[in-house]
Amino acid sequence: MLPNNPAISENLYRAPQNQWRRWRRRFGPLFFRLKRSLENRLTSRKWAKKQAPDLEFCCFEHATPLFRPLKNVDQYLQVNKVTNLTLAARHIDGLLIRHGETFSFWTCVGRPSASRGFLEGLILRNGQIGKGAGGGLCQMGNLLFWMVIHSPLTVTERWRHSFDVFPDVNRTLPFGSGATLAWNYIDLQIRNDTSCDWQLKVWLDETHLRGQVRSAQAPAVQYEVVEQGHIIRAEPFGGYSRHNRLIQRAILPDGKIQSEKSVAENHAWLMYQPFIPNRVEE
Image (cartoon, rainbow, N blue to C red; front, side):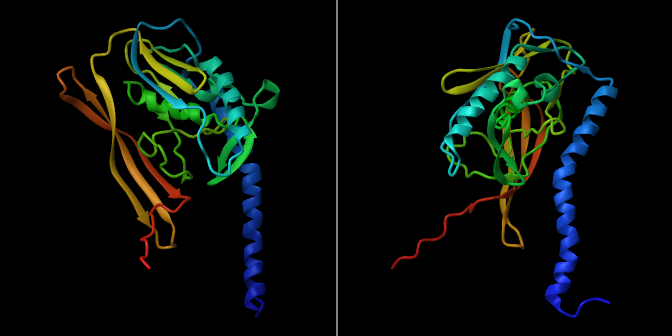
């Protein structure tokens, strides 16, 4: 028999749901990590592993600042992030991606554990700011993804951020132009379907994380990435969502567009107020 008291009834139904959420948060990542480890052992893909001196042609380069003014974020987390990025860069800088090979961020970098020198840094979990070993490596994922979509390399796995946590203060790139990471099941993977070797370069200086995509041959076209269909939408429950598409255009030397294709479609919940309210005059 069901209880007559609505409050008791609601709590009875809600308790199993809350317990399930707790179990899912605790054991879900473990399941997916084991699943990914098994997949990597059984795969026939050839992983990119060799680091080499710089290839001749720089096809695209980009840099992102190491420190940003983030509200309610301890500065030491950004300092620790620099250490984490430096450790990851040692494994990626100079990496060759030959024809048919696939770059996997986690296969290349390995587990970001404290025992390997990775420090506590900023992480985002379900739209909330937290702390964890290896935090801040998403900045490397963002840089790599943005550079690679300016090349003919193929992104075979990329995960978008489900929440847009920080407003567009000093943002110079389109919304959704990055790639989130979580050991080892949320990965960034890039395959070389071209006939020549390509190379990833990443390094840090005093102020920026810097990177290049290089090639053994001079590129026949240049690439640009443009945003289409950007919209911020009020949802029925009272919050806001954000949506767009990123389009890659191959540009010939005479400036004509040779081809264009979609390289990303983004959908995220906003964790801030996107519009400035109208000011009421007294």
